[in-house]
Length: 109
Length: 114
Image (cartoon, rainbow over all chains, first blue to last red; front, side, top):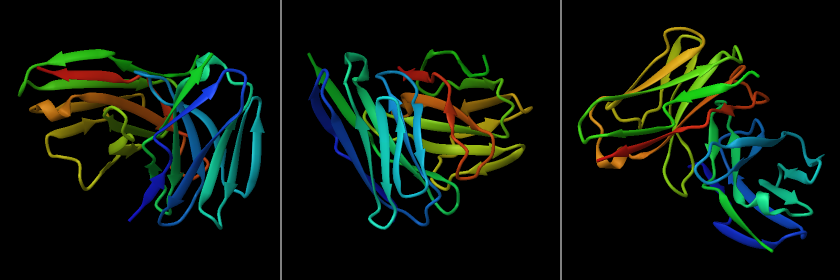
């Protein structure tokens, strides 16, 4: 079966750095997405990785290792508004998005 | 601004009373999706349209139907809502169905079933 694993919840301090991991097992691979979802709102697109390596976009970076079936989202200089769920999703060989359940990130002052 | 719009944002219905949720997009995207998301769970794809081609997920209950009368609009019909259908319903679009085509989400409709 297809599976996306990510931690259920993480806590970090304002101004710090946090890394949210995602491992996947899917039928084929056509890219990995990270979305941010605030409570009660729709997911918003953060990043897309299809090649191995690190993609940096401001305070957020996303890393991919296809051989390990592994990705992480790195958030720097955490702000209170970063409190949200972060969803990892992989596009499989049928171009279907397989979603993780999300990691709830709690930022403390 | 180009966007995905969902109406209403909050919908309350009674057990067994049909309800229709709507989605429109100004992005001129070919693909439209309907997802169901329950609290602390991953979004679950119900169906998607590639232009007018309808694709139903194998485990989507018959209680859920969809219509896409034109490129811009898509509707989700729940024929006889049950208590288990209370959820956030998300509409998304993408330019194409390929790997590099990001899905953009509307704000969602939160459905309550009494």
